[in-house]
Image 1 (spheres, one colour):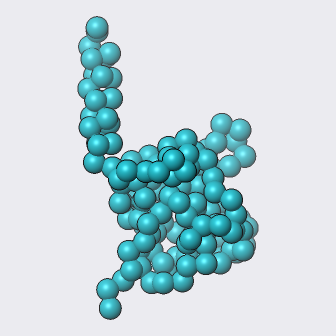
Image 2 (image 1 turned 135 degrees about the horizontal axis):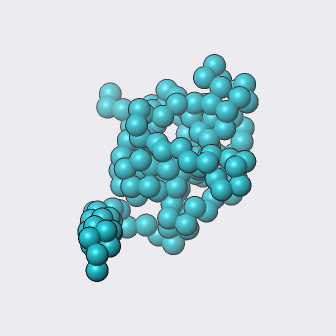
Length: 140
């Protein structure tokens, strides 16, 4: 094994160790978060959710979105026009038509981001699977 292969194994082992700390996901959550699936529109628990608080990654618990950035896009999935700085990674899909969004902390699939739809002043829509999220209400 050369030095580069050894470094790759260390990185892989570190990623494997980190996953031990992640929350246990059910089969459907794994389908969406790990294997980049999607939930059916208008079925997710956070689509019509209006409470004040913070949306976090279902897999690792990292803070992703604030409720003040959530809006009703009528697309069938929770929509946000901004993320918590540094929380979301944007990667063009191989077909070049969409941009995937993932949790910057664990790489879990969240959904896709769309621009220039004119739905908010920020002109951005993070279209997120509810199953990829958990929610922490603001303390009163």
